[in-house]
Every structure is written in structure tokens, then in C-alpha cells.
Length: 65
Image 1 (tube, rainbow, N blue to C red):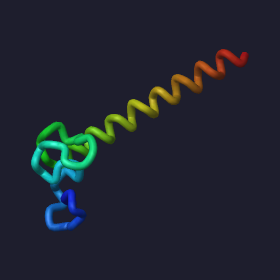
Image 2: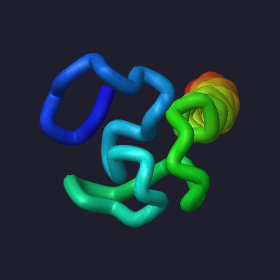
Image 3: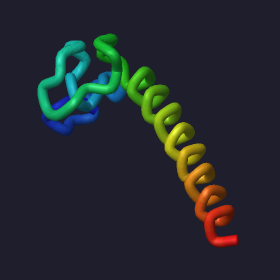
């Protein structure tokens, strides 16, 4: 999906429209312009956030005992 919302190029990063430079908000493709790189970044970020949540919950349980 490109910046203007059409579906002509679904492989393009939404934020930069495949240009490799952010046009609408922070770009997560790392400058490649590819949506797959943005998805990879987001997947990694979600995984890291889930790990942090698990650590916080474990620490909270330890503190309450």
C-alpha cells in the first residue's frame, strides 16, 4: 500500500511509499522501501515488548510475595 492508500504496490512501505524516506510518520523499513522490512521490524519489536511485559509481571509477582 502506498502513502495515498491505493493498493497498486502492496510491497511498498506504508510510511515512505517505497521511497526509503519517511513521508507520513516514522518509517520502519530501514530505508529499503519494502513493506516486508517494516513487518520484520514490527514483529521483532512486538516480541521484545512481550518479553519486557513478562519480566515486569514476574517482578511484580516477586514483589507481592
